[in-house]
Amino acid sequence: MTTFPLAKAKTLPFWQRPTTLLFLMAAAMPIAFATWSALLNNFVIEVAGFDGSDIGWLHTVREIPGFFAIGVIALIMVMHEQVLGLVALLLLGVATALTAQFPSLGGILTITMLSSIGFHYFETVNHSLQLQWLDKLRAPQMLGWLLAAGSGATLVAYVLIVLTWQAFDLNYNTVYMVSGGVTACAAIWCLLAYPRFEAPNPQIKKMVLRRRYWLYYALQFMAGARRQIFVVFAGFMMVEKFGFAVHEVTALFLINLVANMVAAPLMGRAVFRFGERNALVFEYVGLALVFLAYGGIYMFGWGMVLAATLYVVDHILFSLALALKTYFQKIADPGDIAPTAAVAFTINHIAAVFLPALLGYAWLVSPAAVFGMAACMAAVSCLLALMIPRHPEPGYETILARAAPAPAE
Image 1: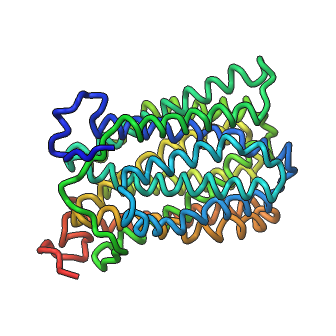
Image 2 (image 1 turned 30 degrees about the vertical axis):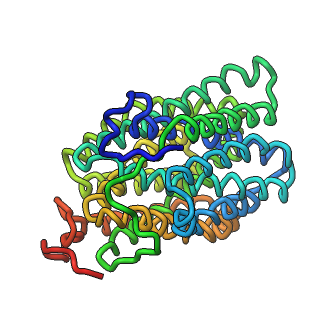
């Protein structure tokens, strides 16, 4: 793999440019991860007999590598950041392909840990490369299009599952093998076909914790805690409470993806037009209302159609989280992006390590209370988002700071 300066990337053929690589990576990752997620709840309930506590433990194990995403800083000392991201993508693909080979609690937890290492290290590096390679003015819109590309790849995977699961009497092993294999092959192609792109600002290869990034850290922590409740329990609810089959869960995901493909670029434009603060406040208010409605499903016996609608609305609102990326891009020193991406991923997963297992036990007592906690977390996130300036920049990271050159640390 040859090294190529990012500034000269426009001289390369279009298919070999950094932006094209970002789109390929954005499309390759969800093929494995989204397929794993779509089949997961049915797989663990039907094959391994999971209950709410077991699924909580599975997601706790899945999030441990996210908590240790700070290890990326050590790895980029000996490995190029782009290469690390693609190797992690390869690990995700291979582990996903082998998922159904271990149909027991211990086996599922082990293979989940391996796939999670690939997923979280890829996501950490991918987040860093996006902010390094994309121009600040174009970043919100490009991030929206990258989200849409990932949604498009997931859409193809979901359509294939819906059309073929019953028609060809597929099993979990076949689907996991194919989806994981496609992602692994894409990672190998990207390793072989693209040069190593060198950004103009060398990244600091040590842990970076800066006081002036405190609001970004706080928002990341709350995002990780809140999202865990949705990821772990919203899909589980559809199977446990309403008895969704594999093709029905995937059909719901399919509707969700179509909505996101349309919404994600629009969300990117909205962030560009209205600013990060307004976008995040809108997201968090909306999520608080959605989580309260989830609780109402259990408290008042609301039906399946409302639950499915809330699931789609939930995902559309989550796409506004790209505003958190662009907020950091605006306030960060260019050399801080890679190490801070790793630190932020770790902060994002602090609650994720213990929350799923803890709330798994709470779920057995009161699912409505679990969603009520998520609504409270969204409200706290909203209060934090109100502290983002309309035009954040170094030295003016929060409304409590004055617009001035960032202090040296």
